Image (cartoon, rainbow, N blue to C red; front, side):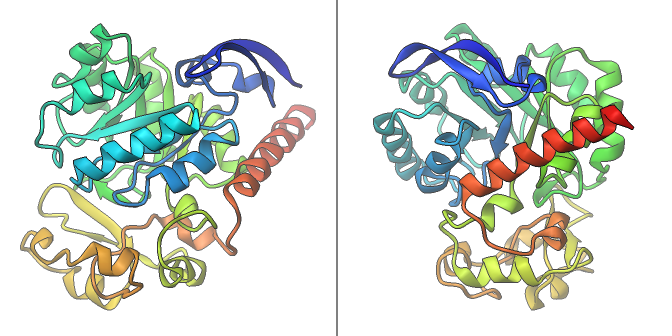
Length: 328
């Protein structure tokens, strides 16, 4: 089932890569310059070099975040990734990045793949593409997908409402949104929301994706920098243990069920004023210090694994799922 292809490595130049499955030889893999079309989600404070380097080392694509707004720290994380020689991408979260020079900095780092989110796809697509970068935009609706394609993006991250983090106030599940967008656009798609293993990756491919993004699963990885209290809360969560907050405003939020999130569930006010202190949650382990952004897939995660195990298990299950469907 393996195939070989030449890609351009940031330090080694043109190198030959082996795809673990023939279906991985696709547009997303070539755009990312990876052998496994799995992308780690750009979670604020979490998607930094410790986690992203572990993902990229497997042949998948690590991503460096900007949604924390800590651009000086984020820029240092990019330099670490460059020193390690890993192929990686950057997410520009427009609602949280106020410095317009971020695009020029990303270009100067030699990064080849960028996702943009939380804003208009027209803001950075032109300047990034003119510099030779590949640009995907994150979309939660068909209308947003069409606008992004009209803006000239190279691909889309189609994000279902079951995923964790910042969401459209009118969420649509991946099972509905992904094939709907696929019917109306021709650009390659990375599916996000509810994906954490090979079976769900195969389902996403069946619905038109050529790659997938994992967020909550990566939060619960060994290399994730978050406190064990958060990881254990994910392990303990049932499929019903996330709440959809701030639905009267934008963005809405999907988060783990905690005392804080339950208190904010029925609020008609914008809950961002009560988001809390993410540092105390993420790294101090105080689960009531801030809103713990997590997806519904938390209900399917039962153990902490290394990133290498997560990716290897996903590839293995993807292969077995495709084989089973092909022989039945």
